[in-house]
Amino acid sequence: MSLKNRDNKNRWRNKTVAFRVSPEEDEQIEAAVRLSGLTKQDYITRRLLCRDVVVQGNPKVYKALRDQLAAVLG
Image (cartoon, rainbow, N blue to C red; front, side):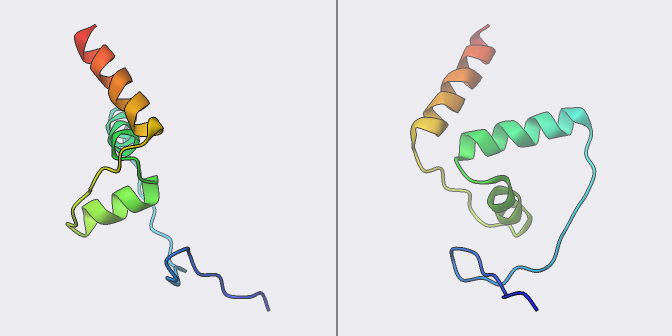
């Protein structure tokens, strides 16, 4: 039998949750994930459990903000 794996916060995660979204909804989710700086799994989990999404600034978030602002101004 294989070893049980835990994530980097020592959580045992063995359940999979899947759902379908429209292309427009996927685009909105992807944009929110990029702007948050979190992984998609962490972002969706926090939103579904009504927890705060705190953005941690890093170069990846900066680029996402810059691209989003350019799209709004364009």
